[in-house]
Image 1 (cartoon, one colour):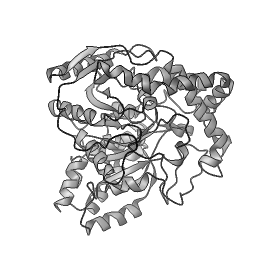
Image 2 (cartoon, rainbow, N blue to C red):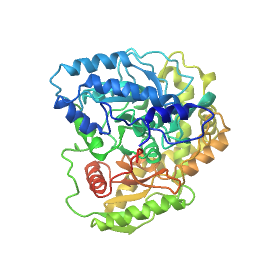
Image 3 (spheres, rainbow, N blue to C red):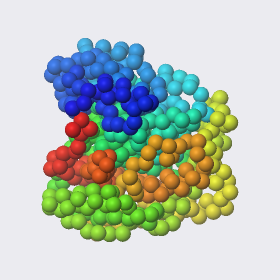
Image 4 (tube, one colour):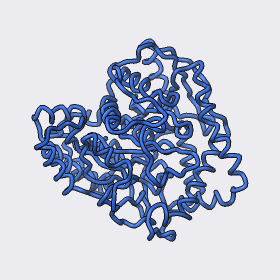
Length: 488
């Protein structure tokens, strides 16, 4: 094991090249996941205040190198921890440190959506999601970084602000939940909020070696600024280091919120009741071929699932070739609405002249292509029904998360020309947007590594409402093949 503080200091030194970076040590947080920490708190073996102190210290050790925190809320976190110290600890995850992504309204904290165009004005009140998140018992210490409005798959912002991957600080931590993923992967936090409108939970989880679960649409409430989307895309969740932490969070959330249009997850078993028919997709029609490292991990995962008794069946991607261009067009429409309606959606002092090149490029693209949008939106609106129809022959799908290796920092730089950025991100992100449009559950599991040691994720998805079966097969897989740890 490496010394976290020494590694963090070295990685923050510009004379030192990229390296692995983590904060795991023998303190109050230790090497435990969130479930184990919550149990230790319930048994009074450690206090929430001690856990919080360790989390703050760990963030101080690694965040100068990672660039993952954009706002700290330590004083209120300390007050919540002190309250938990003396309470009956009825919430399932009471006292476990966490963080919000910069994409939900939290009273007293700014929500900037990763953009300089949104002022750093503290919100006057919570949005619909924040109080439900805290009701699980999690204690947020602040807000984590994201790229502007979550349009892209690397957490890089204007002016060279980047969030780095703790497995290799020269690589991206993914996006748009890259700040949360970097802190959890590095051990600074055991669990953190994330959300997903096209892969924004699953992509950063895949490249940082985490579990990233996107729930079915309706399992969590929308923020007000996303509720008016003509086609709903965004799901709220967390990034974690274990499947059981994801299960613990989702079931804790359901104790305070009844899902809309989908059944509760309820009790998640350690394995599915029956063996599953799994359709394996190696290449998406939405982009180029999957690289060798991704295919090797995918095929190894399929072999392991087959050894567990599941039936693996090679199949074509359950989506039309037109999906990529339709989704990009819708992406542009959302950016155009953001640019034109930022004062109404986010803040009266929204500064259009501070928008990043990618947002402006997407908005301009949408304006040029307005005549084609009705047809594209109509095709996207049919995707859920078409996706669900593919489940007659399979129970779940298995495919890569992304098409190629984790890019270096700067590959998706926020200040690069729009055309270059769009080509790069759409060639890398070829699998994950489908489940957002379909409203279906999906999970990225850290199933392997590339030859250079970087994590490689695999992606499982199911019909809308079938979240439990995904969690059960993920639990079974993790038990049989424990995930690699950054400190190994």
